[in-house]
Length: 366
Ligand SMILES: [Zn+2]
Image 1 (cartoon, rainbow, N blue to C red):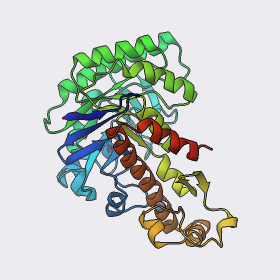
Image 2 (image 1 turned 45 degrees about the vertical axis):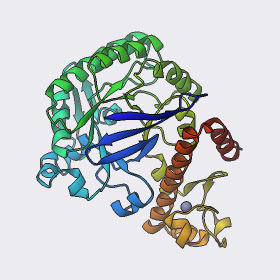
Image 3 (image 1 turned 180 degrees about the horizontal axis):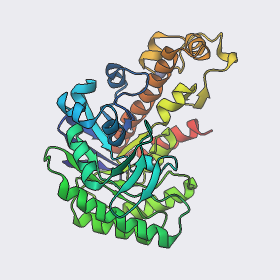
Image 4 (image 1 turned 30 degrees about the vertical axis):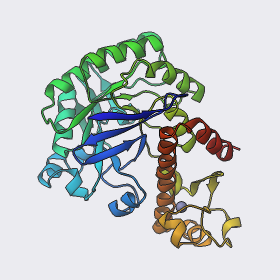
């Protein structure tokens, strides 16, 4: 269940609460990615300490290893990985977009090669629903066919019809009432197809609507254009989730366009490759020039890394490829995003989101 708490008078930004089987989550929210059942280099406690309350794992990969039945036997993914918050599972439809994995897409489903042993596997809407029920996530994502950026209108239209059929099949196969199901809209950069996508999926009455097929290589201006028109196709009383977007500046710009939920590997992947977010923009903290720097990574940040360790220590660890350096940088980046979202929600609540966003972006993008 989702409730809208407040809306910004000047933009499409809004605050809400997503009620899940494992807690009420304030939106706008960001989900760290825990593809294989862990946020890379972080314990669940460390992940939770950043302020993250929801993560997203990959159902398809978990069903191959260690097996969704095994996770089910362990009492579900929350117990299996000891995560105290909520969990979304991605269907895996996006991962098989990868040419190395995809064998072929038919009306029945996606035939793909296991990244582990190369064996061919068939992912159908019914299989996809079943494995997410076994994993026991709070929110399951339908199987969709995500066309590559650049595919023309005709091809995108054919792919969209498949996505719409699969959504219906998924919903019919799904049987766990406590698990919410989100649909995924497609239609590429074509407003007319996006509108049709929303219209058909709305009739099926899902718990939430994800916007798929953006942030896959199109120019940013194109993404914002599609988003601005497409958000109007989506219902006000359901959560809107933009998949695969996670930089601080994109979050604020997409919140202003009416998005409630985000996920991306970038904050943690960037951290593992020495890049952190600060109020003055991105910073490569692995450079030699920081090797003598005392004081925290980011003045004014209250995260575990900035509270307890010096810049030169984290720099030293990263240059030695020590895992703990990656851990500290990941904690910082996630905390940075969670803190920004706290501030953004406050600003939406008191009608100052435009000013907050402008101030943040002026400093961050300067
Ligand atoms: Zn920090």
